[in-house]
Image (tube, rainbow, N blue to C red):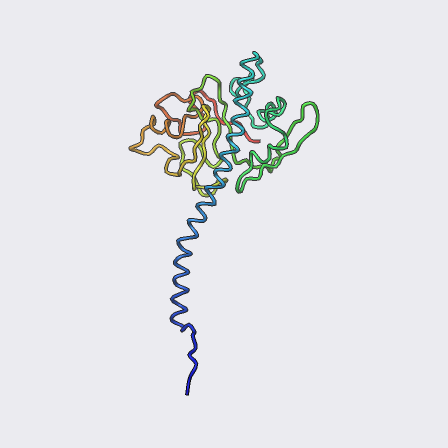
Length: 232
């Protein structure tokens, strides 16, 4: 008499398979999360670079045409102190489009709402509930190339990152320098910690506006009082 063999998992075999899948998932999920965050940070880095290119072109045009209204924010007279004021100068000169502002300043957990008022020139405003993924600084033309023009909003210069601040929490931060180079940096690079010196920190992260070489500020405000542009 022939009997048909039945192929089936035993309970122990099923538990082994489930355990293997759980172990693989434990390794895969952090890697996928890290890749997603890195992709989001790259997007924010690109947005910061677009803002930098617009500001650089405007400053170059101002120098070439001797137009004192087309400057870096720290060179304006009076100095530009708010993000809204600086963005509206960029829009008026057609260096960025009003419709692009929301995208450029948005990031994970930071939706930058805007209201657009048509006219000559078109202007934008940020409602009180608006958040920003990027903050800008009162850069001057005389600042060195490693002076910071923009950073992700979760970073206060020479301070530890915190999990609660959007975008990216303590996963890392982005920096855009006045000289054009930009970087995605890790949380352990956010602050001067021995044996790293102030000079080494400034060469990696950059200088906040107004700081002198070899002495890193511990806030967003530099030695000469210049600081980030207020938002909104």
